[in-house]
Length: 160
Image 1: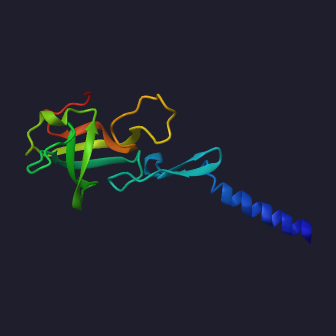
Image 2 (image 1 turned 120 degrees about the vertical axis):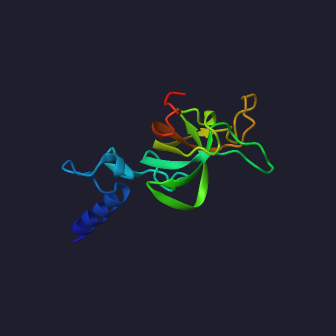
């Protein structure tokens, strides 16, 4: 009885430490899967500003953002995204766009891009040893969109 109890306990600990294994016969598109399997454990990807797991291939629509009231400071290459996967958003999302020169199009031009959201750590974390160079920006995770193709406008090209 003790041996059976020990096996059940160890089995449940193993299951909780390592979630469901990925099936080798899965027909699901890898781009539609919000997680991936690494070392037999399911790793859940963080959700980006566009409310999809980072790395999800998306079609976004919007226009170049130009602030009309203070503060006027805005990062170059910022787009106001109002539609994702042909679904209009209740509240548009400001997002930096890489791999295209979004600033080369007029603010009123409708931009339709395909790509994925990703990110990087920016700034300097607390607790660095004395004498370590630090950045002025606040330590945080910075989300941005990598355009892989442009549907509109035709003047906008990949490869910035």
